Image (cartoon, rainbow, N blue to C red; front, side, top):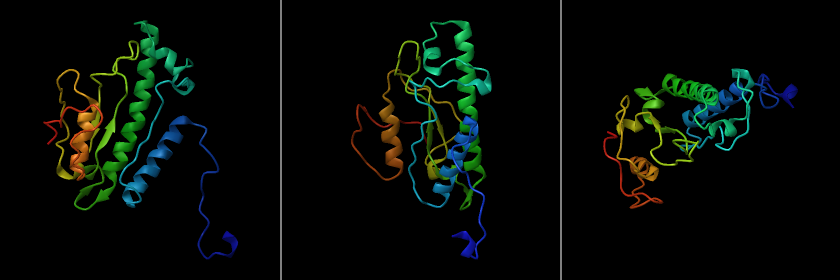
Length: 187
């Protein structure tokens, strides 16, 4: 019905982009628009499933992701896994840059967001799901001091971080899952 509309017809995707990087970036672009337009304030996006058998021929890794994660300290598998991790973090960096470039109030959308990036496994070879390497980006509306590396006590539950983030958005829950308390050193 665009022929009868005074508004111009805009180019739009007709399906999922063929390139995985283009698809991921399109999803990140939509997330930025949703946050910018206050369509939502919470987004969950899984860049890749931990049991994914997806291959990455576009970055020179034709092997399935999940079997590579059971690397057995094989240098060849570790190199391929590192390429996949670099690819994923590059996509995430694109998202963070878009948030930072989007003006909001006196700062940026990133200044007012809390974005958690990480994995459910610290060492997928051993299925170790504790002491996770997690990146927390954004300023949380001034409640988080960014640009630091903070190491918490070994075996600190991930839910302690989530409980701390909930508090920053006004949800004062006493516990969340296996949490043992809120994290210090975020502000």
